[in-house]
Length: 296
Length: 314
Image (cartoon, rainbow over all chains, first blue to last red; front, side):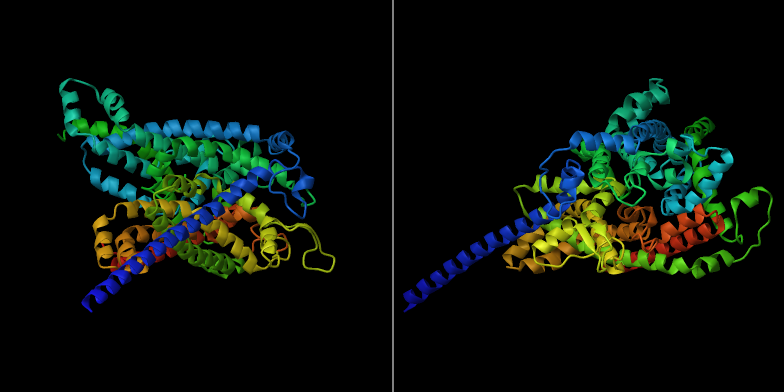
């Protein structure tokens, strides 16, 4: 009798574990299915942008859509996109504003982060806390007065108006200060004993050691110029505006019809540099982003 | 260490940053509050030496303005719809990503892709996907050349097509498109933060649960979510702050008319209202609206912090 019971129990156990194994496999399949479906939803707009930008208008408006262009019309669409939205001018504007504001911003950020991390002065902590507090205020609140300030300064429709108001970012100063603080103070004191000047120490020791953070700041700042829309629309006209401004309305004719393939070509042109940044510099963006939640 | 020579040097290093912050951050805070209480303030007349009464009339004008209610409603609706949906979806994706080995790095890269995009540009792609090309929608003379890829997909699965964003589209359809786009856009940041949090959870908790034979659903609600609660609180709070400032995503989908062609401004938001007032040279009213927005964000953030203090387990 006892033997029979044992055998039955053994069989039960093996059945249970077989069931568990099937369940586990099924669960894994479900997890993968969920992830792959979500990934396809994420990727679909990019796919649609690229294939639409390659179609002719006639093919685009077919009632049964084609999933891959039958007739490839890439060159005409992309060159039309460039000329219709004067993208080359806007691209140069954006590049100029992006590069100049990034360089100046890096200098200002390095100097102030150094002061907050290494130098001693009265009211340092209070000043730093006050700067951090300004990060909580929504940017729209600044825009109203800044609009007025730049009008009084006579900066309307210049490159200066796109660069100067945004040179200082408290968040970047904070990020770099944290990085500077990790560098042992002994290095600084040793350099002082050797008679090295602060600037030389900063250039030879601090900057090389915090290069990853500086790269993160550079990428985020450049992406900011590339994606900024509201401020340039407020303070510039066509000849000084940035790339995103040229995008939205350039492809709709007076009768309201839109040449979608050309529009999608322009969108692809604007997205392409961002895509390159994503492929090659992803880890720096992820590092910067995971500490901020600020886009651009 | 603190001698006068050092002090002097530190201020030199800080000088460029401090000057810019004083002009473009500190002065705006003071001045915007001032303008909000100057009745009908307008920069051009102010420069000519006009005087303005000090009172609450700007705030009253903002609240009484016919478009204000719909701006506030749109903003609040978009917030309370997109924040929970994107948080739950991001949590599920992050947990799923964390539980697999093969393809993990690849899928993680795919899910981060929408972060590095231009929200106007990709909004235009979404608009093209939902857009119908044709004429006289919803009438007897309706001509539809192409219903758009999303409607094609819906019809492929046996559904009926919807007028999402064209002339004659409903508010519900417009909002659905906005919610889909904003959630799509909000996922990568949330997944990044939550996955980072998941990877730092001590594996011992899961081993203990496995020995006890705990079900997977229970592991998620009793171990993962509580241990992840600081990160969840963080993405929810930043999600609400971002949600209340929603504007460019709407320009991306609907263009600068901020609504379907027959009902411009239907989807305008609080930030859009501030910029409209500013473009109309009503700086006083714009300032009052900006202060109202700041007040709303502050209150919502404080509520969030209060709730998370009770719920967050460190």
